[in-house]
Image (spheres, rainbow, N blue to C red):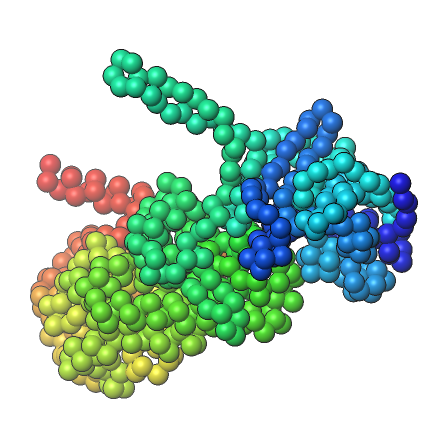
Length: 621
């Protein structure tokens, strides 16, 4: 037996490994199995070069738990190590000096493997580690390396006959959770589900049947429980795959999910390596629940689903897999942001998504329109947050009107320019955020010859503002933001049938009855006699400001529900009847007209609505 000291310049290296290198100790399993996969992959490579004598045979990596002995064993049938290689690789903690490591990285979450420390992640959960290994090389002798988490180690001969490496972890008292089958199985499914070498964890029962009819018998057989898919679709060529392959893989990633709308297969090897499949899911009402579903892998090893520094923010709503060995694993955010490859990858993914939208739009517009209700949030969000994407998307972003027709921005300008240009020569896009609640206003606008767009998602306020500020010469106004004659502001003005004196009298009656509008006001306008006698409008700027503040969770008391009460002086009730009534009748009529206008705007609620209904019932009873 030989004894020695691991080549570190301080005895504090092991506490640093345990405390700083990973925020979550479960990562040890990923590191050790990744090492086993590397050893197996190297063996396969050497075999293809004719440097391995005999058949390679079974290369399955197995994980086993011995609860009584409190051990976890990871066994591979890879290249193994000679005694000299054990001395070289296990007894030198990183090739940079320990002092440099401690001073530079102790406060960052860098990957151990990046510094040659992958194996030492074992000491985050183990009080003692044994490595039993035999090289594939002819005439090699097996050796056993033992270390209990201090710089001292022991090295002795062993009788292991087959090539490969067994790592035996004697689990520490504070990590006994990892001796539970369910815990290890969960970690294997999380980190090793798509590794390129078979990973076995225990056995499972497989049923086969012999005979037919009443003579049919079930035969149960114990077989190895292989937990991974060694050939996921992102490693294959798109031409080898069918739509069903992509849908099946989506279901493998997200069991019981609604099938995706479509997908993008990523495959690039210059100037960086990246493969993957990104899916456009059908989004439910809760967008936040849909986020962070992209899984990041490095050479088929799961890393994280926190990909916001790799994938643009608007694409965190996508689902799927990205695999790149050029993305540093488990790195700090500052390192990711400064990494040149990460920036290139971000640009590449954005470009591929834009190309996918363009392709569908140009080749099958009907399908593009059919999916627009689900995909519009991706496009709009992208246009708001990403300049390069916005430049490409402006040609395929769609506007939908209340008749269910779709238009590009250019097409819509051509459609409405003749009738919906204001005095500033801007095209006015009139829209509704709720077809049912704003039905009366929509009909009034249509009767005026206007087209009405539908903007009913939370992101639409920001999207409209984006288009207004991007020089498209557009402005957006909601159907209830002003009276119908003034939605498209021109210099035209209708004459009232009332004298100035009578108009002042009408305004005084309304102002006295309605009271304080908290930021709004009563105004008189000469509309069509067929328009309603009283209309509630919500000025576009103030309403939009309030809605944006609400989205950001700000205190709404600072933004009262500002609205104006507009009296149509040309409506017969106002022009011919109101001033002929006595004071009590005037108040009753004004209150009734005001409440009807509030009801039409869905603003009459609670006690006020109940009182209004009761009075209406009294009149007809």
